[in-house]
Amino acid sequence: MRTFLILSSVFGALTLLAILESFSSAGEEANVSGNFGAAIPGLNTGQLATFEFGRSIFKKSFTRREGLGPHFNATSCASCHEDPVEGGSAQRYRDFFLAGRLNQEGILEKIYPDCTEFNAPTQRTECCLPSMVIPHYGPRGDNENPVASGVEHPSLSQADVVANRNAPPMFGVGLFRLISDEEILSRADPQDANGDGISGRINRIEDEDNQIGRFGYKCQTASIEAFNRGALNNQMGITSNSIEFAMGPGQDEKPFLDELFEIKTAYAQVAAPVDELTDYDGVQDPELSRGELIALVFFQENLAAPRRGRITSSVRQGESVFLRIGCANCHAASLNTRIGKIHPYTDLLLHDMGPELADGITMKQALGNEFRTQPLWGLCEHSPFLHDGRAATVREAILLHGGEAESSRNAYAELNQQDTLMLHRFLESL
Image (cartoon, rainbow, N blue to C red; front, side, top):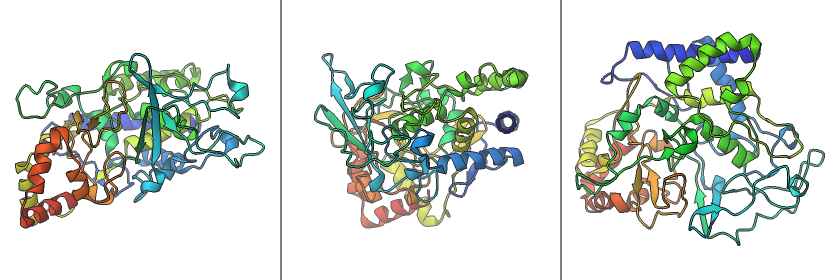
């Protein structure tokens, strides 16, 4: 019954979206802002219940008996997305590592084998991992003796490339699924045809039906579900089945599911690259149930966008400086969605950020020096900054920009004291 109620709430939210579309146009403002961690306005009682159930899954600390591991970096989603509230970012102590090695073709690949049925007997003593994410904990310990002791960090001696990541904030990010491909492509200029030095390009995800990537520091996934399932498995060793696959043959719900899938196709909300995930840790897969995954995705897709601060004359002056030195060439103030205009200050494109920020990590079509333009909304609550959290202040983050952002960075460095102050007032208002 609870699963049906969850599905009903999700269906209701999609219906709400369709209704909102009918009353919205590209030029109107979308009513999607709220306090950090709140739901977007307009959800009904049932949808809010699903949202809060999703929040509880987001905060849940998994145990070995529930499928944690065998390797993991954290025990809950909120462990790394906690600042200032669940759904936010994290301080540097929650950073994690990615590591890879170059094969004979020069392609970066992970340094440890996959966890499969063939190496299941050795997985408690030898490392196998689902991705380039390197865990801090495991593999020793089992369901009966869940506390691992004397476990060393997996060796990186085979790695040619090592990079670290700071957890990105998630407020309002689910709204990016409502932005059309045409809106994103309208700002892409992969060959810099206009000669302005900005050559943003998309990351097209082959194993998600060639959809345009929107989520992650390198636009490496096209859906919140795919991003979720990857993070659950890579960071916690929690397995899941894709929502579409898991819904399968439930005959008593089939008429309702047909309607859900019909809207799902229209809004492209469900797109996971792998139907099933397994980890052979002695706990039956999937370790996250269908209802839990649906609620978790629903929670993240419907987190409100950060509420804008007070717009004063100083803020307006700062915005003029922001535009004058070219920051808006990548940090586009507004994007049109199917329910109206939002203001994340990103173009959702990949840009060359120069050698100093390059990490050598390739993801799909994103190169080692390329990163998605990071949204600026909620900036005042999201320190540290940049993909690896190396910048403690906004000023440090700006001065580390290179590549396509070099001219804007240089212009920033040359601002007088008054213009610098006004620019920072503007950024703090986001």
